[in-house]
Image (cartoon, rainbow, N blue to C red; front, side, top):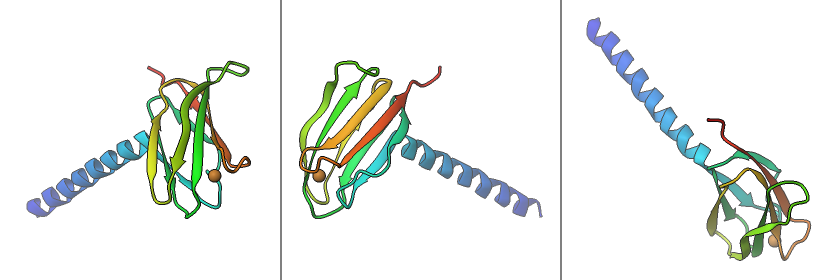
Length: 121
Ligand SMILES: [Cu+2]
């Protein structure tokens, strides 16, 4: 009986550790799939997270990412004319709070905003 309880405790502990690891990984890297010439809905993320853009269709895309520290600020180029080949992915890191605008050069309606919040200490 004692052994059985110990086993239940141990498997619960291992399960908790496994889910913690999975959460940490998924929190750091956020997957955005290019599909139907769209990046999907706008996102709200945190400083330190990485965006992974995966071209999940056969069409080629050319991604530009601009960073705005605040509304009306001069944009800063984060990703310039990245050729997104079908089946391939690339990453960029959200290293500051503000707005990141993702835009495809080939399909002008194809765009997405990522609002990035500072991480509270
Ligand atoms: Cu495109």
